[in-house]
Image (cartoon, rainbow, N blue to C red; front, side, top):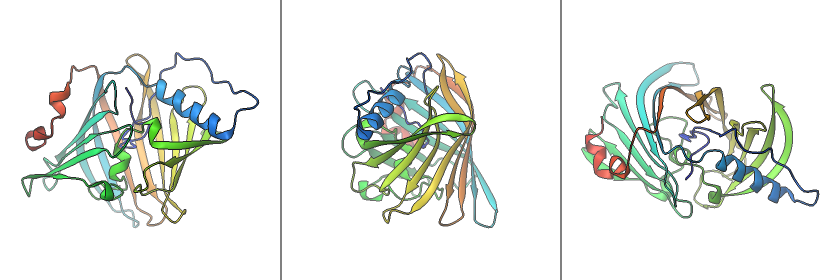
Length: 268
C-alpha cells in the first residue's frame, strides 16, 4: 500500500513514518543497490494510512508573474496489492468547477486515468501516450499525479548533501515506461524522515525541465508527514504552479466505491 511522495500530485505528497531504523549500507553495495534501498525505505515509511483527503489552492503563475487561482479537493485510497487510487475535484472558479480527475496507479504497466470535463459532459480516458501533458494547464503533468511506486523506476544513489539545513540522500530515478515525459529525475530525501524535499525533472532531450520543491512539512495521524506547500517551477518557460494544502483528514472511511469512474460526473 503506497503513496506518491510529491504531488508529485504526487500529488504525493511526500510522507514518512518516523518509526523505522536508520539506513545502513554495506561496503560492497553498488550505487544501484543503495538507490533502490533508499527508495524502498521511503516507500515503507508511508504504509498503513488507509485513506486521506485535503483541500488545496492551485496558484498558476506565468513568466510575467501574473497569477490565476483554483480551488480543488483531493482524496486518496491505499490498495493492498497495487498503487493508490486518487481523485481530484475542482471547486472554483466557475470555468473549471466540476472538472474531476481519477487515477488508478499501477505498480507495473500503465496507470488508468480519466478526466471529466463538465462543459462536454463526458468522461475522457487519458491515453498512456498523453500522460506527459500538462494537467489542466498547470506545470504538473498527468504522470506526476500518480503515486510513485518503487517498481516504476530504476535507481542510482548519487551522494549525500545538505539541503535547506537537512542532510539528504540524493538519488537518480529513471522511469521504466518509455512513454514517460522524463529521461530521469534527481530526488532529495532527508535522511531523518525520508521526506521528498526536492525533485528535478529532465525532459526527453536530457535537459532540466522543471523542479519540484516541498515546504512546511507537518506530522499527522500516526506521524505521517505532509507538506503545506508544493511548487513546480518550469526552468524552460519561467512558469510555475504552487499547491497550498490544508484540512488534511486521515482514515475517513473511504472505499473503492468512492473512486468509481462513474462518480466523476457527480463529484463535488
